[in-house]
Amino acid sequence: MSKVKKDAKFIIVVCAAVVVVAVIFVIILKIAGGDLDVVGSGSVVSFNAVLETIPDRVKADDSNGGWSLEAPDGTVRFVWSTNYAKSPGYDVMLELDAQPFIDAGLDVGKLPDNYTYHGGVLTVGIRPGDDDLKYDGNPAPIEAYEQMVGKYRGRINYHAAMDHYGVKLGGGNMFEWARDLSVNIVTGEAQDKDIVFVLNPEPLIAAGVDPEKTVGWVYAQVPMEDHGATVDVYKFLKPFDLK
Image 1: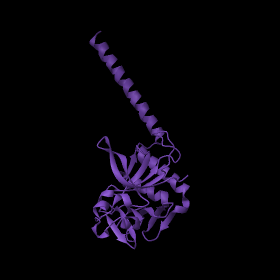
Image 2 (image 1 turned 120 degrees about the horizontal axis):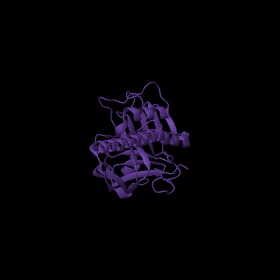
Image 3 (image 1 turned 90 degrees about the horizontal axis):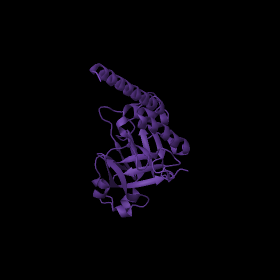
């Protein structure tokens, strides 16, 4: 085969490959609704499904100037703030009943700086920095969350083992919710953990908590991704099936 024919064949192969890549790109865009950030956009859709499933647990929060989603048992809530002048120094946080941890040995004076304690309530979350998340206008709950995704995308993750989206609250603490409230698409099993409040046990244990005595919270290992590998990490968990 002459060099000219070889060059022509090579060009045809390259062009065909480019076409295939372009087709794949278009398909991905269609699947993602024109948005290549599948996790970010998918999390908005599924979070909205949670809000619509338990609307009586979604409330404007005057104390923090934002919105809150309260657990069905009323012991913990996820708050995404919209007014930091009113919030206790956080813009996303968990607020939880401290008593189960106090009963298990917690000395609140030994908690790290990302925790506050007041009136029987523990608060843990992310404190605003120079790049504070400031919402546009006076958004509704899902709009406020969507703005957080757009402005602080690094806070949002996907937990493959649980088929959950989540908001990272700093220090290994999380609020997670199911991508699909009916089925874990990864395992094919029924989804029975529609929302999960997640605490890093290490600072609580260091402050005196006996993890085996925390009533209402499960102390268990959870598979997590760490630099491409899956490792089992202990967490305090409070899961709920909303259906």
